[in-house]
Image (tube, rainbow, N blue to C red; front, top):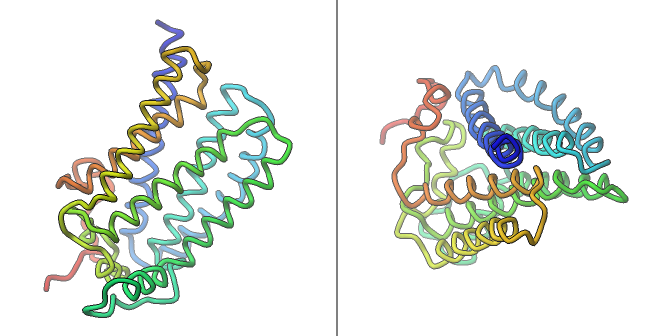
Length: 262
């Protein structure tokens, strides 16, 4: 029982804690007064530099400690990107609502212009991780970042294609214009495709371990748990689940981001 707890339960709980606390911390920070954003970004920028250093250390071997260090380091650097986006510091050159009535290619182009700097920053970060990975045996960090990017891209595309719950009511006041780029409506075929592929990948990861095709490692469990949580985030877009139920401590009242009534 102790072995199972160490191999399976502990990494899964660690991934859950990182996901829950990391998301809540960003929600809490971005709900503060805009005057605090400079301090928040300053601290997170220092943590970003530190996380790149700890990521490089984690890539040197396959130990349990390295897997945890790699996963936590990527969560920290991902938090920097989330905070940079939600503060409005790193979004895109277009900072106005979607032009009324546009569809098709024009809508896609304007949507890309609203977030392109953020996307390029994520790709640049991935490029740094690829550079750090050269000649190193540990791959937990780069796999974690790649998984986060793929699921984040899937979520953005689903918001573009259409989902019942877009979550625009939780956008900071200075990013309310982004809600115009979301499409609220029935889930599209793309939603079923992305969620179906994600579930298939998760089942494959679990099957690989249960069939002894691969060894049960801390890194494997961390990635499987993270993928499962990302799938949950996708499912939330199809059903009304108030974020206060998951992050009530982070969703306190704040005039800085409370949406104005029409």
